Length: 291
Image (cartoon, rainbow, N blue to C red; front, side):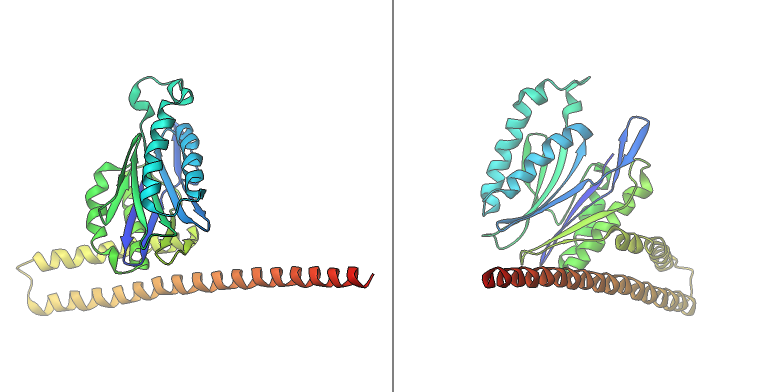
């Protein structure tokens, strides 16, 4: 089983997925979330279904993202044609299966094309391609659709809020299903044409806070509904919970700040390497000119 979640925000979209892949009684951990960044499109895809079919279809969709398509409308049209073509191909038709449902696949595809104002999310169910209109969408774990839609209502306030909602959805699936596990992967595609791949260790640090957050919110919920509780005790519970929530928020903020520092250091090192290489090339050219 796979869980993949797509969340909208006012400044882009976030896709997240787990990493556990099962083959009968055997399982392994793989990257289920892949991304593309070109002049014309920033995109990402996550899939659910037979692993070999996903490995066959995913590169085809990625190649479509790499093409010179500049609008999500054109991409949607070609994606629909692509999925029908793949399922009608001899390769898929001759794939050994016990029943036709074994060929069923699901994908979440997010794109931000050059000529579009906003990023888009597409849901693929085998040959059927639809543009998502929900603020929160999942594939793989059908029972979590309601959870995704509820968290989607708070994700539009910013890309970081959407990332948090996506992490919550994947974490909830891990709690409920043994077939969903491993690191959580997430990628953000901003309307400004930026693509960010989040570090899995940083996401794991955020997930580590969720059990305590869940306990506090459950405590507040049951306290609100407890009509026998007097005012002073209720106030103490609220005060304690707010204090702990503030502490957890500080920890989450530290995770984000440290991640930003790491990204800046990596960029600085890359620029230094590029700068040194450029200096060497210029020096080599001058030496050749003198000769």
